[in-house]
Length: 218
Ligand code: DGU
Ligand code: CA
Ligand code: CA
Image (cartoon, rainbow, N blue to C red; front, side, top):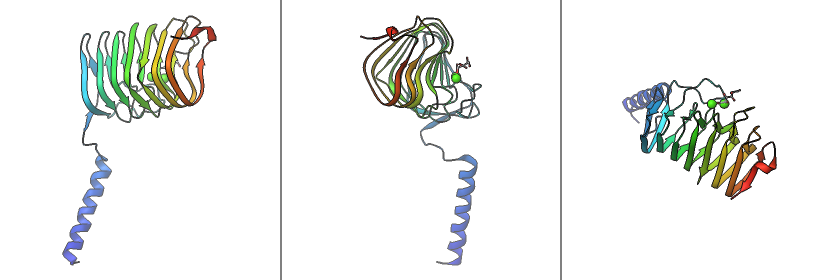
């Protein structure tokens, strides 16, 4: 190899290393955001399969002060989106929302939080690598999860610790794998859970409820 070629290769390698060091590997199909995407009442955000990467909105750890990737106002819907790491505070729902085919590649503090009363339905999609909670219920709601997979979590569904309001939870056609704690947990004596066609593997226990009489099949 000529000396010129060797120098050229060394310089090219140096530039490549500096580029990767500064910008990281960027995903060809990814869309970078730096603030929460707000979806208005009555609207549907259709990502058409796009992958979203959040920058400067949180590190995806268990820190509670991260920003949500999406804020769905009451009556807003979300579909066909992949949320890449860092998952930050996921998706905030203000009630009467349908979330269709959303994949959380690496759940952050949590994947989705119910923050307004009403019904919230998750249909299709998956959540991976949650260090603790996938779905957090902070307001009374009818919460349905169907055709969904969660792999790696503490709990899939958690009603806010110590809260006594009533949630009605439906789980249908779901697969849950590798759960350190449980599928669903509540401290409320009025919350009811209904499930059918649910398969679990390597999940410590299914339910952490005040009474087993709150759990039903349908
Ligand atoms: O510690 O309310 O983790 O909404 C009490 C807090 C906590 C919530 C929850 C959430 O449970 O911040 O992400
Ligand atoms: Ca939390
Ligand atoms: Ca949270």
